[in-house]
Image (cartoon, rainbow, N blue to C red; front, side):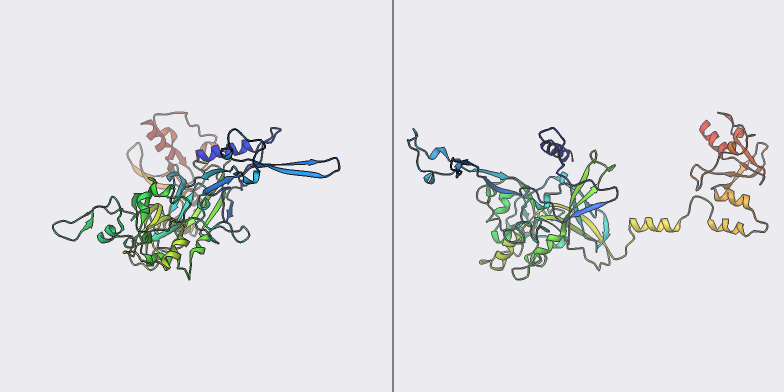
Length: 480
């Protein structure tokens, strides 16, 4: 959040005009309290990748005969000119044009943990299996900072700039769907996962990650058989940087059949559905934790299209993964035409964040329902309403007593100074209705400012003949 505020401040400074007036903010207008505005996507100015800057000057001159002459003055690479420079200079058409290459670096195999604002269901908590888990990101651009593919609809905004496919997706798995056998780990060549065999029994991995995501470097991931991982081979940086990258990442290995079920095949692709599973929310964060001064809250959300098992009879653990779907279009096409095929039916997907939760059977008792039920079935802090209602029909009516009980007073046992036991009115500090001070109703009552004796604060209800010792008990307790 701090870095985002700093970037916004820089943006405001850059937007300041020449006269020093404050420029327009690059963020949308602040919405009202309790309001929310949705955006189908929030693409940055430049997505991750390689770019080239080509600069030239165009000079135009109007001659005496009102003819306009123009010429483009282009920057050329001086290294292709001989030294010393010949006179005249070589024909510009034979010289190399000078262009500047630069790379926009965006997350690809890992994302900063601080970008995760929250996720639902919370880690370790529980909810019905039918809920759609989702992740809330503090960076509104993050789901669109890379293009997931090279062909429509995965290579940028589509449908008259109304939608753009994200490169992130949330997928929910059963734990057994990500559990690898020892022979699969060996075949895949997963690093840091040695296989042991104890007393001649079946080999097993020494340590299985709780989330099903295996830690490794990008270089180690790309060394896995190319038919058992995502097709990064056509990535512009594959040969130059990725194959030697030591960046840490985590990889899950679902089956290829499950991969085809979730993301489709060459003839039947579900990839386009993920376009509608990410959006941006603009909310008013005034008064919220970690919000800046007059902060416009822009958060991106990525929602899973897969729930937990909907027809559970017992609670079941689920694993939710925020994965990269970059190059999935190439991977799907290659999987259908994979010759030769890999030796395992698993495929490695890059997991950027993960958590576990418990999916519950339909109609479970959860915190929200419990609070709603308490609110619908409880009453204010006073005697049961049925008792009070019964007094209204008593003969003769007892309005004075009803008023006392309805104000939160109760009867309590009380021993007077002479030793006899009787009853008295008493109430605590939490009452269902405002209670006026007796000193405002009866000018004859003069309470001392302080006293060591509770009896100084006793009040006799002359209508009912019962002593009110509420202030007396409070004063005695404070005296100790």
